[in-house]
Image 1 (tube, rainbow, N blue to C red):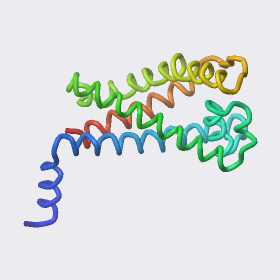
Image 2 (image 1 turned 60 degrees about the vertical axis):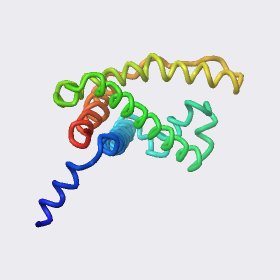
Image 3 (image 1 turned 180 degrees about the vertical axis):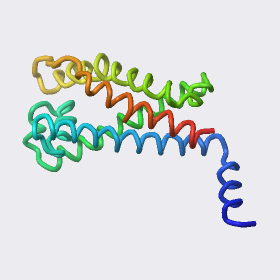
Length: 173
């Protein structure tokens, strides 16, 4: 048996559970890396913000404005939060694809559409909820700056939805 045959045999002999874990792992990693990279590039080009500042902005969802005074620690928290969100949306897609197995087969259609679903979920559920939740323990007013712009919608289509659906198709059961 040659190496190519062994690789194909081992890849196809994974249990459905192992395939699901692998699809979630790769989907979350791809989504997380591509999305934060695109956000950093966009923020750098539009306002000159550094990647650390972008990550501190993510952490501000929990810490409020004080996140921008926390240096590398709050940037690390922002990175952790970002990947938690990326993996959460990947798990949601995995659960949806178990109910609707045809979803991963249409990567170029479903990926951008799922990215828009994530975009709307972040804009109208996650971010307003974080603002409300943060007001409970920081005793600050509920402040939500409103939805992200169209550039973020495009980023979500291609850097969030597409890699998640691609990973479900490529590595899923």
